[in-house]
Amino acid sequence: MSGNYLRLNIVYRYRNLFDINFIIMIYNKTIIFSFLIGLVGTIGSAQTITSKVVDKKTNQPIPFATIQISENDGVITNEEGRFTIHMDQANASADSIYISSMGYEKIGIAVQPAIDSIIYIQPKAIELKSVYLSNKNYTIDEIMDKVEERLAQNYHFDMTQKRLFFRQSEFNTMKKLDVEFKKSTIEELNEEFIDSVITIIPRKSEYYIETLCDYYGSVEKRKINIIKAAELYDKNNSGSMEAMSEKLEKIFKDNVKPDSYLKIKSGLFGTKVQVDSILEQSEEAKAAKDEINDKKEEKSEFLKYRRMAIEGLFKNMFFQEDPTVNFISKSGRYEFELIDYTYMDDSSVYIINFSPKRREDFKGTIYVNTEDFAIMRVDYTNVKNLRNFRLLGLSYQENLYKGTTIFTKGQDNKYTVKYLEKIKGNLFGVDRPLKVIEKNKHVKGKRKQNELSLEIDAGIGNVSKYEIVVFDSKSLTETDYNGSIENKSIRPEYLSRYNPEFWKGYNIIEPNAAIKQFTVAPESE
Image (tube, rainbow, N blue to C red; front, side, top):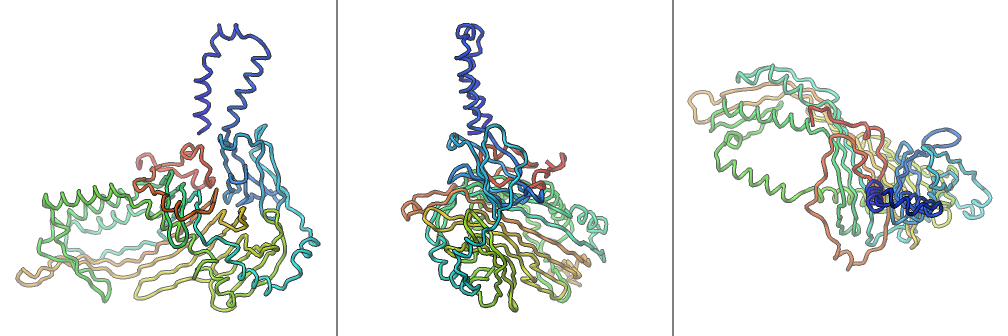
């Protein structure tokens, strides 16, 4: 229940108390004082806390710090150290929040009076004596052997139910777009028109999609039930391209013969494209197209693709089969170095760096519990392009693959994901001639009827960022899994600008500054 709703409800329930006759009738200091205390307590039970966690010594924000209300309720700070947490009826009795982060003292802060907008936490001193007593002076090879031996007992491979928040952010940048007009025998497909097409292609675009859901199952089978979702992007970008497509369709309809075909050539290669589908404008075709679109609307693919995205992130973790970041499954191909010790969730941990010996792709740091040898956190980044393709004017690079995964230990002594971040980037380039030729085999003389000739040099960069925070995780029986449902009809709500009210009452990852500042120009909405 949101704070606004609760306050309105209280006003409605107690509105008669403010009638002047009623006040005169109960004018007693003790009664009034008791009433005010009760009213303030009721309102306070639904308060929202927003703050920023900062290192007391360096004054730098602390990302991925845990903000806990109770054992099963809390959030995590974003990359800017910011968080928002809602104190709802389930945790109304909590009088404090607890803040912890790797290498820092855990602190508790009373929720009354109001919490400061900046919370400073102190780095924690390492008690090397106790660490050495617990770790028995293992060598790095012995530590890594124990990490591999205990994967099965340290991590969940069976079915679980997770309440999680998933944010996907997409950033596209047109790094280069040069189109040289060569020739056109269709009057409307002239250089001015081609320039207008180039003008409407967005040079930069952002797309954010946020989902709160319950995730059921294991690696082998899974379901999700979406509670709420939002999309934040500029509809104008896609709208302009659709309008231009309609204009192109009309140009072809007016200039190309119904029994023609188009031959698209780029350098040495060419392919045929029948024009019938472009030119066909019969009522039957329109009706069929409308029916298909209606069916697409009825059956949303949104849930399917959200499920696949979450599944892919969980399946690709280091303890699963054949992961991309393979420092455990192919540990013989990496160098490991014990760097230092620190504390994480009140446990002493080894800080271990890993780097490739020869041709592997990643380097990073793992934080290993000195008692049970579980990896409690991993930070990784690629050291070279994961893919690098270049042929006949086409190029593709996967040039960015990095992330952070943080685990928490449950009551069953197994570790589950608390926070997961992955960032992937790629570059795609085209530097080729392009010809679109209309041919018709039913006319006398030359089959070639019309031609459009261009030279294209373009480069596009894409960065995808995935974030998951898990608020609660518990074991799931086969019966419970079979009884779980998926809301297949749900669709995300479109937002043209960041709306802080949309997730009010729900605990999520606090949006960063870029998301908060995102807005669509008024004429684009």
